[in-house]
Length: 201
Ligand code: ADP
Ligand code: 5GP
Image (cartoon, rainbow, N blue to C red; front, side):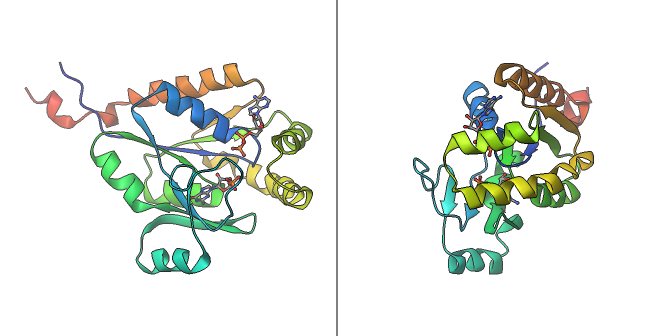
């Protein structure tokens, strides 16, 4: 029997510096069925970030225009910057049977889960707050004030963990990635993802 599947919406959240980006990059390299949804943001690009690849970087006026066009599946202000998931990045891909990966903050994630209850949501926890601080410091992409803001927001974000289907601690990268892959593998085999037609014979 030929397998036909519905696309899956995979949402990854967790405090800044917990390793979401690192895990997502590995996932995208290892699983060609997963497409990354490139968000819009008003945050300035970091060194090495490419417009259209990591984010669609824009100013407030451009972001407002997209809002007025109802182009966002969700949007939120996170650590003082605006971010939004573009409907165009998600809807057609899922309909075509591909899987879509969102790396978004818990406010946005809860809104997506509300609109699309079949969302596979995974919360990535750091091993400790001190490890989180160290990761943000050694990543060397944010100034000390920005790091403080991201750390103080982490406490509130972790409290939203209970709304997610899955959680894992990113203590060491290899085992954490294996746990994430196991979640995705199991989710791909949920009966809900099979087209009902294949049962009709
Ligand atoms: P996020 O996307 O959640 O903000 P990143 O993926 O940018 O986090 O990771 C933050 C920093 O922590 C990066 O420098 C990354 O290399 C490092 N990192 C990620 N996972 C681990 C891990 N398991 N152990 C140690 N450092 C890690
Ligand atoms: P960063 O500035 O470190 O790239 O991302 C900061 C936070 O914004 C992270 O928690 C990231 O998951 C979140 N984020 C990125 N894109 C989006 C988006 O489109 N919507 C929402 N709600 N959050 C996002």
